[in-house]
Image (tube, rainbow, N blue to C red; front, side):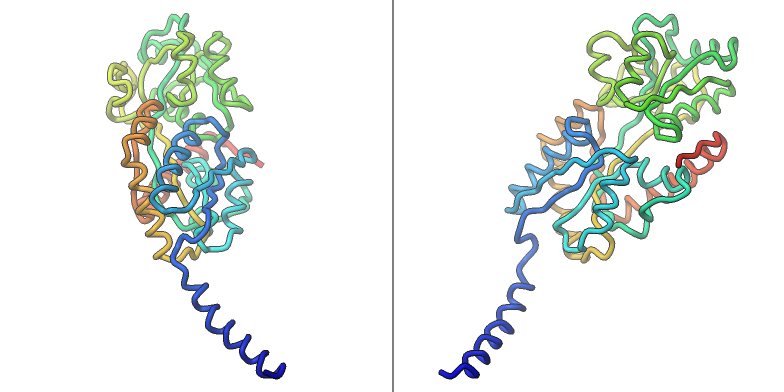
Length: 324
């Protein structure tokens, strides 16, 4: 065989093998999920358990890579820039997708156009916490104290314009009182300040404030939702605790990929992820944190975004909150 025949044969072989390689069923290699949540946090723990279930059902390793910080910009920018193959995916929450567009003058991503929503992960309501030694026993007492001392009652959050801040603004506005917002750089610092009495109260999830609650350093006044929490059924809603009606401070987390993710790939990922959420292991872990599983279609997640984005935009406008 001369060199010309050899070259022709190699080209023919390449032409045959290339389509075969391109047609390999998804997934054919490990999948990486880039997370904006710190390792060990509630969403991180839940998604890692789900990833273990997906690894078994898909036959490929699903790796969770935590890239917290920068208001979620670091993780979401990486997902935005990923190739739309299904092998680099991400997580996001209500703050990243429904609040940041109104809070920041410039975002490194378009919350709606730059991503393909795959499934919801969970939804959870925020609780109202005070220190264990606080004289305030219910929301009625909290509102009365704020009305008697305008601008003196304090509440903490982990960021200006974040979900915890805006959840507290809902209560403040609905009650028609004026309270003082005290922002902290870290979430743990918020609840430590409430526990010591340096800050009067704060909102939070059982996942974040739970350790201090279990240590009897915090006390629950109410849940900011229309119904009581299945995780804490003994805790009244804000309205049942003597507060205003209609205070619903909730958050949600979604599983997403870059834009232009092939529909068949998105559907495969959604099917396996929702099956993982339905497993007893994941549901038990969610119950520990007070999360409600919210496996859903990408279209349903888009509906959450389109409902909450204008609602939070209005709150941000009222507070004048702005981040650089």
